[in-house]
Structure formats: structure tokens, C-alpha cells
Image (tube, rainbow, N blue to C red; front, side):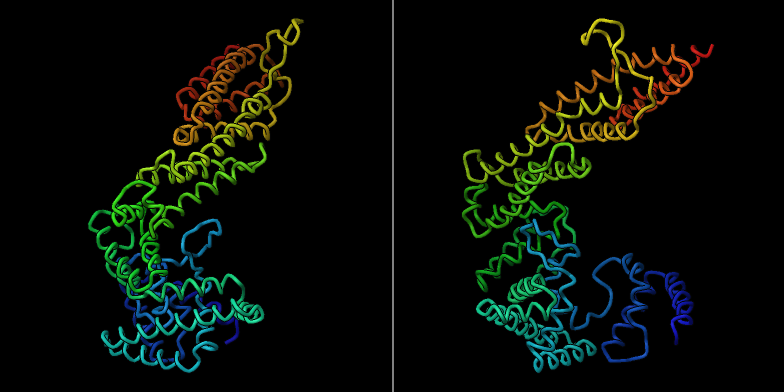
Length: 476
């Protein structure tokens, strides 16, 4: 069928499938995946499954469908998969996009004879619902794939030409790095699967019972592999709504709640994740040029710093004299300095957006009033609005960073300027005419927007009414 004729059919199929109920879509997905496992051809499996995937998202519980060999291969490290890799994070991450090239590498290069036989057995056992036999075959799959990848990576480390060959085959150095992460997680597959099976997919509170069970799984994994047992708490952390709660596991296993004990333990890596995130944020903020930052992004980073530092300190007793304590204080100092430096220009931005000019012949120290001889510069007005939003939204969260004093000072400077400007602006609205009157009204609208941006809806409404009264008095 040519593309021109196929397009309407695909559109009608998508329209029909989108109207299925979630439960019917789930049954359809299960049937399709079983048929694909049997090797049945002639059906557009990927097209149908992609059309009903939004419906499957509304079905509770575990993922719908009969898992094929590739999906079964991924189960031990499923909690570590990410769509967007964060190079600044110290967490264990595996790009979802790396699965296909690594699986193909195993099939075609590393295990060309062994893997097809394992796949045939897995398919047969899945279709026969022989869970015991499938469990044994999966154990062989995980151990075989892990050993093959680790051996290949070890050879690549010793031979630069071999490494480059593998990287070209996989599609990049990052895929080889992901393959190594997969292999290490597969080396403790049974313990990773225990996490997958026994723990909720999202954990709001990592309570004592869960901590105790994870502690058991981790100790067993660490006994099996001293180096790779750490993948268990990383998998658990991916399920926590507040990731720093994983430090409760460190506290329990170490037996002490202070940072010195945890930093010397085998779980120090868990604390380092949050410390490095704080340091990365502080370093990034301190290197920005004043006035060139995206204030919305900066505000988000400051909020993240406050959230992580508060969560980290809540879970671990941080001593000011310890290494971790020094690092947190140093990161706070760098971020606080960056915030203060950025905010030092805010009053000037406001003065540029809401200009004043001198009246009379008293020199530069004489009285000034709003300059309505020119229309507002809306580009400057928007820059000032961004500054006011920043101050308003950042101030409540900077106490844990140590920038609250400067934030309070800048907020007071802005408030003083606005109050004085508003009084003068209402007077200008009363006395001005023609274009200047229109300019004065435009400035009133801008200041009303500023008040709303600062969360002062009542003051904004009052100013709006004062402007209306002044305009009416001038007209009469």
C-alpha cells in the first residue's frame, strides 16, 4: 500500500483505538504482545501499541502486557533508566536510548550463539506461563549478559583501538558507559528485582519497615558483590518522592545519625550525591555574569538548592566542623554572594523602567517626580517586572541559604521607591494632558502589574482605583 492511501487508514485506526476503554486497551496490548512472542506476522504491532499507550497510562498497577526478552533484560535496572541524562548528577543513570544498541551488541557480537538460545527458551516459558523455569532462565540471561559486557569493557580499557571500535559500533562513548552500568546492575539482578517486586513504585514516606527491608536486601547484595551492592539503594532512591530520605538507610546501617559516621561508611556515595548537587548549583550561579541570567531559571535553581539542603540536613546530623559541614557552608556562601550580586542591580532596573526627572532649579538633590514626557519603555518595564518576581518568590526560601538579610534590604528599597513613585504618578495623572496623560495612565498600568507580580493584589486594586479617580477629576 502506498503512503498516500495508507495515511487515511492509519488515521482511522488511531481514531478507533483512541476510543477504547483503558481495560479493553490493556487486554488488547496483552494479546498483541503474546502474538508477537509467538512470531505471528502481518499485524502492525508497533503502530497499534503506540496508539493505545496513552490509554494504558490510565491503568493502575504494574506495566501492562507480556514482557518480551528485551524488556525482561531491562527489569533489573528499570529504576535507573532516564529519558534525559543529567551529566551534573552523581546518581546511577542509564539512558533509555542505549537499550536497543546494547541489546543488538549482545545479539550480534558478544553472544551470537548463546543469546538466541536463551531467548527461545524465555519465549517458550513465557507462553507456557512456566514461572519457575523462566526464573531460572532469567538468572542465566542476567549473569551471561553481565559477564560478557564486563569482559568486553575490560578488554576495551586495555586496548584503545578496541574501545574506539566498540564505541563506533554502539553509537558513542556514552552508550558504552551505559552498557557498563547495565552490566553492574545485572550482576546483582536478583536483589534489584526484589526492590522492583517488593517496594511501591512511588514512596512518599520511606518508613522504618521499608528501611529495614531495603537494609536486608542491600546487605545481601553487598555480600554477593561488594562493589555493585550500591545499585540497590540507587534503585530505591529513584522511587522516593523525596530522594534524600535514602539517607535513612545509611543512618540505620551505620548506627549513627551524624555525617562523620555516614561519610566513612560504604554508603557515603549516597550523601555525596546531594553535596555535589549543591556544589554544582552554587558553582553555576557564582560563574554567571550579573544581568545576563535567566531569572526564572536562577529562581528554580535557588529553590532546588534550598529544598535539597533542607532535606539533606533533616536526614543527617551535619556538624559545622565536619568535612560535609564545611562543604555545605561554602556552597551556601557562594550562592548567597551570587544572589546578592544579582539583586544589587534591581533598584536601578526599577528606576530605568519608572523614570523620575528633577523639577525646579535646586540641583541634583532637588525634588523629583515621575517623568511622563515619554511613553514607557516596555522592554525595560518587563526586565524590572522579572526582577520584582524574583525578589518576591526567592525571599521566602533564602533563609536556609543565608541571603535573607540582603533580600529583605532589596525588597524594602523596591517598596520605598514604588510608594513614592505611586504618589507622584497619581499627581501627574491629575495635572497632565494629551500624550503625557496617556503616558501617565500607561505607567499606572505598569505599576499595577508590578504590585500583582509581588503578590500585593490589594495594593494593586487600590492603585487602580486611585488612578481612575485622578483621571476622572482631571477630565472634569
